[in-house]
Image 1 (cartoon, one colour):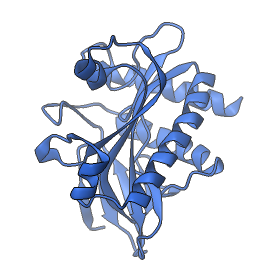
Image 2 (cartoon, rainbow, N blue to C red):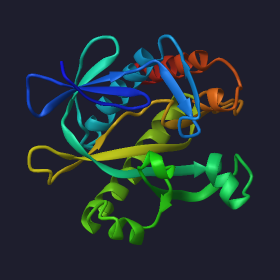
Image 3 (cartoon, one colour):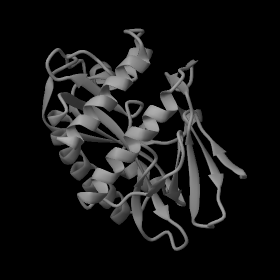
Image 4 (tube, rainbow, N blue to C red):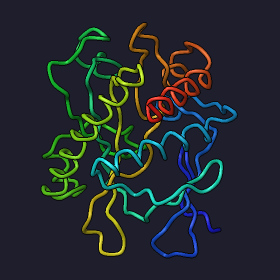
Length: 238
């Protein structure tokens, strides 16, 4: 298959179907806009499995996604999309860059979720942007941006409840969206949902179980990711 795109954590390949793409999850991990890098055996499989489980759950809750079907140990088949160059970040608890930018203490619960938008551009360092910036950069039409934000709030409600059932606190997470081929009129949730894109803390102890294990050298990344997968599988089975 022809390689279409390779990013920090995934590769995309053409398939025999023009509007379908194979997404392969890599074992690589990066932080600080690629400044810190490492590889962890089994990371790709875990993130793929979690993304499949969570996308299937979101589809059942009425959230349209690019996911079509599972495909092997580290890959899935997804609908071909044109990625909207906006990263939507949903925040429920103060952590990461929000603490640095505001001085609010890490771990403080927000009175209501905060929606942030970032310009998806590695060379610029994925800067925080306003609706007006998005307009001037022609990243999304106003109706598309409104749809993306509404979807983000819905996903946040669904995942917060579900992860709570799994004994996990959803601190914050990143979502990406894409325009479906061939007409590009429909916006769907794309990319992945995994501990690479979500901050997840143990609900009882507050221990970090996501990519902050790697970012902050707090412990073994695969141990944390594996525990998240086990809890998600148990919560879905219960």
